[in-house]
Length: 152
Image (cartoon, rainbow, N blue to C red; front, side):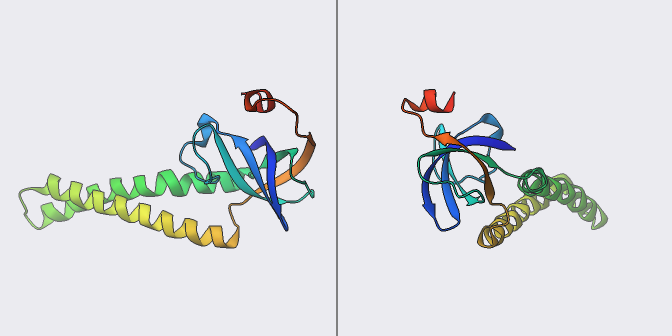
């Protein structure tokens, strides 16, 4: 995935880049700073961009797919498998409310999936695993409104 943005701060080899939020961003949280229509991502500054420059930022597709799996599919798999296994075990034990027990186990597994995702995310952030990268300098920041600059 590639986006354009404006470098707002540079610290060593890391650039903070302000990017217009798109609908594809959803709840990914690869760019966690900011709210509303704008967000800031910390990106590896591979090209030596400086504050105020318009740059192209990239998150490699394999990392994006891995993040999507962790955020969406892992908890969903936990929910479905928990419901099926919980209901099956409750029926084996002869319990009358097997559907309710299955649903409760499913919700528990959903919660476990979210917890695993959260812990994994924290570990990967420390390593910089899911960090986006500045791959190209597009030019100096233009004078104008955010809509004119970002082309919203």
